[in-house]
Length: 218
Image (cartoon, rainbow, N blue to C red; front, side, top):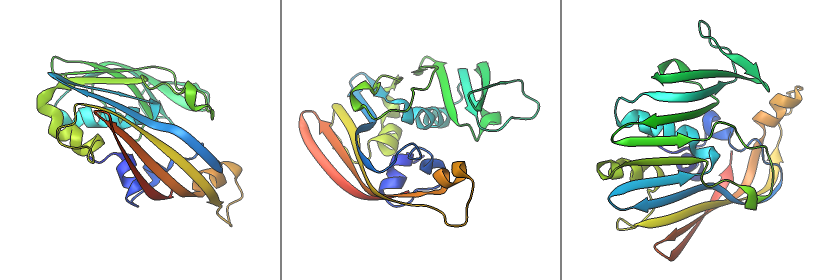
């Protein structure tokens, strides 16, 4: 699979990736979309909350796994029991698959498998601009080393092959927002608006700094 970040940075942002940027207005935002890598006898990945869905989808493609926790959706899923809270529907599962939740807003799920262990916190953080309060341990994925090729392709595609420890963070500079002219609904205007500027990917790989800048239009 491809991380939504890679798609955005390479100009392939879609509706799914766009929603991660809806919360941002014009301005500069540091330390976003955080990823930490520790590769030894096992692969350990820690991330901020934005990566939760990618981690769950990634793990689900590795092998047949059972998930437990909460799934948040924007729309009610017919035939399933959930509760509505703060504008989303909350579904709780235990040791189950996620096939019925293909269009989830957020997967806040855990996995406890001999080869793959995933832990994700169960409450999304409140929106805010203070980068120092961003939780870089919101998600924690640990897995066998044999899954490294897939992990590198999805999350660490631009890291040197021999990288053992890495910290990746992204800085957003949004200098303009194009709003849809015909739309009247304020919520839809915000969702459909195109945010333009720069996204800078900052990598620290085994103490070596790497920086890449991309055009942002999403």
